Length: 300
Image (tube, rainbow, N blue to C red):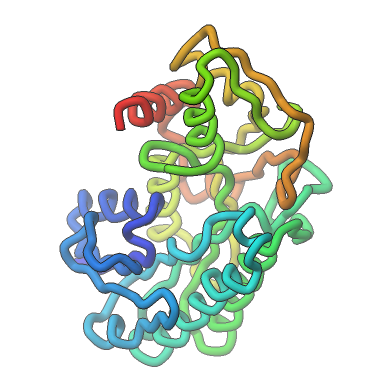
């Protein structure tokens, strides 16, 4: 039976990955900072201030390890850059070293971010685009990517980094749609967001993230390289939020304050040629996935 360890199993992406691979009949183990798991029966608690995975890898051999933990907040990385470094770089280094020492046959999947690209010089963004982060979060994800490449080239640890674009869906309790909904609850007549609405993102639904990671694990070459994980479509923030609000209340007015948040890039659209070549096909339309997200967020 295939055995997988998901670091960050209690988080948004990690929790969905636990469900995805458990449904396939895999032996799923989780690790996170909480005392108990709500996601999986086989669970390791990790000390957030002194995380060590030696006991985890000594206890059980894994076929795969996915790093879905760390800090996922760009604003927090701006406010606390060293904390972000510890969460997103130092923890990856510890994982790679413990795999090298105790479970060398384990394949490592690092969930990186499109934040490494910063404000792109061209669209769509392919994996050869220059790396030019505009936040500590982006820089630290890039440093972790290079750690994966180092451990592959020097220590023969099979690894790959997935540059994930703007993920959304059920159970995500932060970012654009969560923030919009809670602003709506405070004032159902109008919602005001940062920017001017022409900012764009390449949104990818959480179910498609799980499918993409599954495809990568089964078909990609684990040579320390990188692959974009996105939908391959550019959507403006204005259009995305208008669609979201229309599924909640068609009378709510949307406004923008023309203020740019530090660390936020202007426009994103991914070139997913490499991902599609592995067999990835998005499974849900943006409209239907937004409806699913609204159904969840309005009933919690």
